[in-house]
Each structure stands twice: as structure tokens, then as C-alpha cells.
Image (cartoon, rainbow, N blue to C red; front, side, top):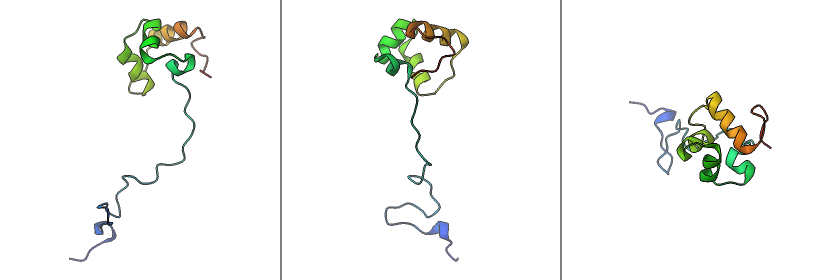
Length: 87
């Protein structure tokens, strides 16, 4: 059987067609998370907003989408309008 380009291995074990560790695209600056915006720890931010710390952590990692009520709680804790972006 004839080997194809994707069958060839690099010396570190990756295959030619393997994207792992490859180009991930241009990096762009990330907006600050709610806790970073005030200089709070994740726990402080969660306490001030009346939320559980895992909920705030999930939001910061973009592992879940916030509900309107969570947006309101975070905005109240940060003392910003709910539609105002963090700077």
C-alpha cells in the first residue's frame, strides 16, 4: 500500500495532517472578565453579585451563557449599566 502525505509522521509523533499544536489564528486581546474589571477575586465577585463562584467562573470561561437576571446581578455588583461593556 502506498503511503500518503497524511500517513507520514513527524519526528515528534504528529502526523502531517494533524492540526494539534498548529496555527490557531491571530490572537486578539480579550475583554476583562467581571472580576478583573474591579480587581476582585472570582470569589469576591460572586459574593458581591449574590452568585455561586462556579457560576461566575463558568461565565468568565464562556462555558455558559448568562441569563438576564445574572446579567442584572453582575451589573449591580460592578455598579455599571447592564448593557455597558467592561473597560
